[in-house]
Image (tube, rainbow, N blue to C red; front, side, top):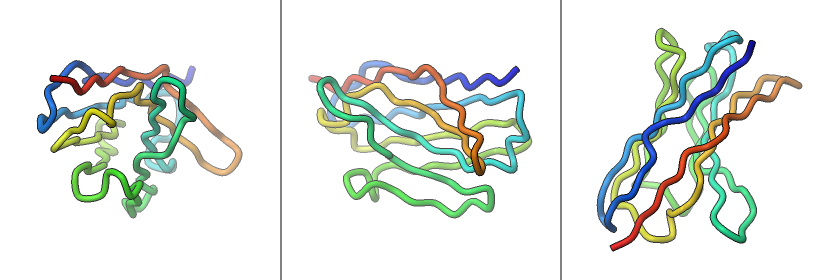
Length: 115
């Protein structure tokens, strides 16, 4: 049974940091590209960062230089380190694992950036 579970969300002040974790099971984690998406209220879901199975990374322009995606294949976990958070980073953050036609999503974790 495939499971993707995000954790680490919460409330933080502008300029603060959070680290999100995504624990995966039920599939060959190391063979999958892993991504973080986010969806703010009233907006469409957007890609935040992606890490390939060979650890090549891409980032949305809005988070470049502030967020870092990484993966630990031994722990079947992908991380998103978020620094210098801004109010516009407020959203539900979702983890996604995909390979070819296989596509798995978690249920999300809420990040709120507010003073």
